Length: 219
Image 1 (cartoon, helix red, strand yellow):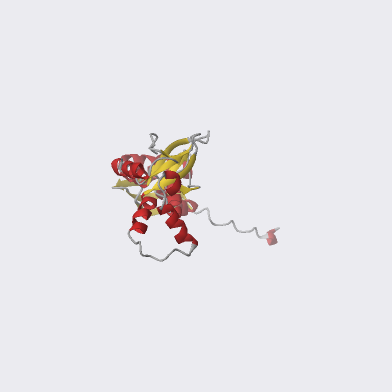
Image 2 (image 1 turned 90 degrees about the vertical axis):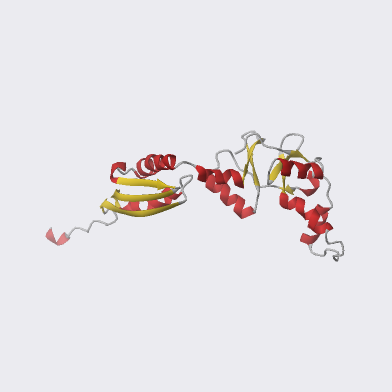
């Protein structure tokens, strides 16, 4: 996240919002109350509504609730008028994957990060989430070995070859048990920076077979 988050207040003027987003190359910014609480988010889409409505002065009066809300927002002059209220927020320990899902699900351009005290700790943008894919291949390989093979699966990492090129992980070799095969590829994909996972693995022991019932006729 960006710890030194750029913010606005509900009284920040519309033109100042535009200038901040353009000058700082931001897609959105949180709006804070006087107490420092996040009360909304202003993004590029919210500001462009004014241009959209003003360029269509001959349009019929809006009758649908959504169109009326858009026109009311377009008439706004401050952040409090144009902001999206009840914004989606995350905690500092939210994973990159969960943050990405929230942004996609809610079409959010900016996720305020709220600390334990309920105040703003930083912000996460789409650009911040994309930076995870700039992680080095060596760091990705080390985490796959330490976290996936050893800590998560408990298999011998010496028997599994892990190669990483441009974020694509190739796994080959042998895991300890057959039950590990459905787990290793999803767990590897969950590692930050992984673009894709491919390869082929075998197993040492088939632990998915149930032992056959004893033949009671022998007793």
